[in-house]
Amino acid sequence: MIYDGHAYCFPDQRGDGGFADPNEFRRHLQLGMAGHFQSAWRVEDRSPADSGGIVDLSRGLTFDSLRDADFRPAGHGRFEWTVEGVDYAKQVMPPSVIDMTYTAENLVAEMDYAGVDMALLHRTPYLGISNEFIADSVRRFPSRLQGLAHVEEWLVQPEPAASIEKVGRAIGDLGLVGLQFLTNYPALYGQMEPWDSPGFQPFWDAVAGLDVPVFFTLGGWVGKAPASDAARLEAYIEELRMVRRWMERYPDVAVVLTHGFSWRMFLDGDKLNPPDEVFAAAPVDNPNFYLQVMFPISLGKEWDYPMPQVRPTLEELVRRIGADRLIWGTDIPMVMRHFTYRQSLDFIRLYCDFLTTDEMDLFLGGNMVRLAGPPLENR
Image (cartoon, rainbow, N blue to C red; front, side, top):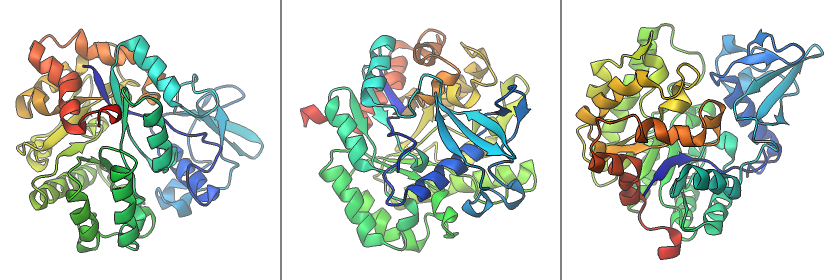
């Protein structure tokens, strides 16, 4: 069983994304693209540019820092904006995303060609917040797809009862198999309390009672970036400690850290150099802690297939965490701006000969099958 633990389907980015107010969706989309590490360029001559036309970085990454520049999804996986009559673009999705949507049919076609049996649909507000959209994608391919629920993180504290009801319906009625929680979104709405603070506890107590895994996507910070690399690292380590504290409070809940560690932070020439403090802070010793491994989406811009530079880090993850708690994922379709979908699998399947057959089976699918449970058609 080959199971992609991190895939996407999403509605037309030119629509409302499931938000009651399409302008709110557009703010999320513009902020997400402004902060993305992909390079921007000037459309007329493809000369290098930056994202300064759509965000005032001197004010940090917040909704208030967004500039009015006719930001728009332009088709073929790219986003454009206009400053003083000059058009700029950033390519965050591959050009094959022609109409700025990615359907279950698109995904399953890629899965068929690459030899992937199942995939788990992930969530992020700038790709849409509708649980019904994800559930419908799963229903169209119930033996191939499973999906994560999402509750607007910024509503958990002010509307705890409604948030609890929403996640309960997504799991119990719509058949979604876990919750994805993006930790930086409450701060975008002025809620600066940690996401494990008392205001979140009624929600987390309810989630823990659902007996599903929680997928945490760590946000780092909102607003101005830390003043130094050391401060940035400490902020990240503190959030890993928060995951550890959360797991101590809810010891029976399986937790998946999406995207793995913040690998771009640890680039060191032609290698990765994550400090020991990262492994000490993260709950790698907890048998319910899982780490996603998806180097091509994070580092495909830096290193080509088959990415031999990450092999020492992969071996370290197997040694420190164990192949029985690592999850292969891709971020499809976004990963295809760097690697093909098949290459995203083959860089593990064909080039990680340090893994035994049993370890490979767990890493590439067995662990996700155990976490997600049976597909919808078998329930």
